[in-house]
Amino acid sequence: IGGLQNNFMGPVLLYTAGGAQCTILREGANLVSWIPANGEEQLFISRCSGTVAGLPVRGGIPLVFPQFAEMGPLPKHGILRNVIWDLIAISSQPDCATATLQTEFRAYALPGWPHPFRARLVVELQDHAVFLQFSIQNTGTRTFAFQSAMHTYLRLPGGTPVDIHGCIPANYFDKQLQTWCEPAMSAPLHINAATDQIHQSPATRLQCQTGAGRVTLQSGGFPETVIWTPWREGAAAIPDLADDEGDQFICIEPAAIYQAQELAPGSQWQGRLCLVAEAAPESETK
Ligand code: TA6
Image (tube, rainbow, N blue to C red; front, side, top):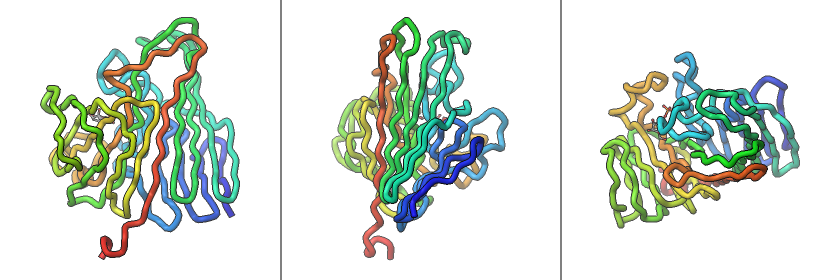
């Protein structure tokens, strides 16, 4: 039977009758585990998560808001990934389970961010897919602009390059080179080294071969896409990542960074992400 298993303070667990399951931490409303029916874990979590005080979990799908990286006065990637969210609704049917988490900020609750807002994340789990709907409501009296991303850590087998299919060619900012680059016209995007790029095109339908099959990623509401991995050479510089974990994930992040979003008083913005898992054909697993 499909269902739910939760306690008020602990992680939120969803599962379907078909055998899919996912875990959402109330810290950061982070989807830290997703195992589709007949499948394996699709998301990466570092075994060093939690070893450095003050850092959020290294992996899953941290939510970035209202600042991307160090592009403003707030802590890196903003303020949502460190706070404890409330579980406000949960429901279950045999083939689908849903959880809604929410957190609210009052005006001037934080230095560098005077605006009150309500953030909500709805996670819907089906046998082979998980849907995330991230929304921000401006509960204040002034329009504000914000950056956002769903910092999705897809698990890789490690030790093998990864191809990302379906990128829409567009200029991208290379954070390592600190320069704007023209898109490579040849698809797919082949990753075999440290990569940190902000592409000026949405993740309309990207496909990536993960450790246990293929994942399709579709976003809505986010005009840009970040592709990041430290790979082997960059792992040592990240304090809450083991040295052998650098090539065990690729972050594909629907984002709004250079194309920040504006939100008028009382209005709501919504960003969506759908992940669909497909088992690898037998010929590919041998
Ligand atoms: O989204 C890519 C990025 O901004 C990278 O530059 C890298 O710093 C990464 O995020 C991880 O950030 P974190 O604060 O989680 O270490």
